[in-house]
Length: 319
Image (cartoon, rainbow, N blue to C red; front, side):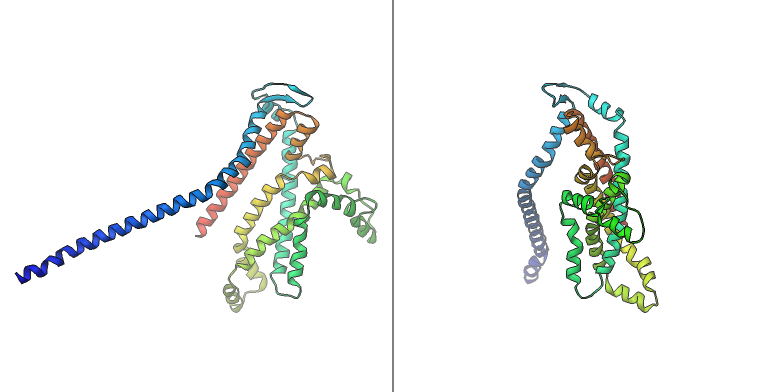
């Protein structure tokens, strides 16, 4: 009898432990589910606001793109079908605007990325006045685009009183009418000056995230500064550079103020953003301008999707 009494708890104990374990897992899952529901409730107002701010205007743009609406005849509106999209593709201005966008954005992106890398490498070193130098180098990115365009057009690149021509005159070079003879270059200069700090900040964050022990080990192994930068620092900065290119390209595609102030679209500087403005407020073709806007959004989404897939693939391979 004694043996029988002693064996009973031994047989039932694992069942009680398994039951308590299942109960604990159920409670844990219930807590996680409650936390997810609470997190969704917190995100829901911001999600609704984002949808109202971004998607409702885009849906309105799609609606207007199917309308035959000229501001000169505001009361004469009708359904146009896909005629606005056909006009966008066949009017001869769309493809040149795409090439102008590629040239201006691509040139500005390459120059700002190279200069941003140089400045990031310099700021990554310890020296007296580092905080002041960093603040001064960030300043161009904080200047309003319209103000930056006015500074470059009248203070720096003006043919008679500009500081650039004054500097060229010191070395015997004749003044250059930048705004009329090289309009695309003036836009590239302005965008490069304004977005170099943006690239610099992202690349500087990448430099400061690099482990110091690895660099010290390379120095101990006899690697030169150039070899360390070429084979260790640059591969480490690849993901940061791609992020900077993605964000910078999305920002630059939307640039309007420098083109409107400096060139008015002349000299092959009529980008997609300026062409949209021209059709809406100069040509007064609201429907056609809306079609330009829809096509621009689609092209931007396609570029961003391809770039993000490339970045995610790189992150996965590194992981």
